[in-house]
Image (cartoon, rainbow, N blue to C red):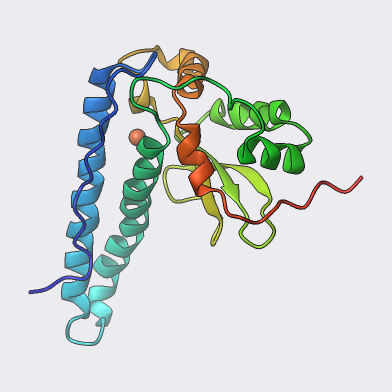
Length: 211
Ligand SMILES: [Fe+2]
């Protein structure tokens, strides 16, 4: 049968990051492939339920559970693609250099890049399992940072992910102790592909913070 959700796992070339080992990345790519597989698997199973044009009452518990899990797996797949895409093979150069659109956006939305960064890093250090994500509101160009629990709770509908940082322990446990998440966050910033971040930014100019 044909399905509506057949995704292929993407390949990423990210060797030589600073402070995030190739072993960590290999393990992480395997985990990502698991999300792709499960997204396809759940989509196929849900398709089976609905192919007769109706979800019967006795099917509802299983159908509901699969559908709830789809949100977890789907976001797990997509967020990992954003995360790998905003890392730079061979390592980056740290904070954005010069007058970039991102730096400007951070200033317009937070007052300064440093304050934006303090917020993003602070979110990354929050206890729990999830992600720190900087989004852009397509309606006005403003940037805002958010905590995402697991993969699916806290994403802002319709906002564009601009910078995505995985803070699940699997993202760093081979390189750092659980309590050393701040060191991983520091390493993450060293490896950001700011050119990729710039490409994600819309053309809209952020409305400056009202005085
Ligand atoms: Fe991850």
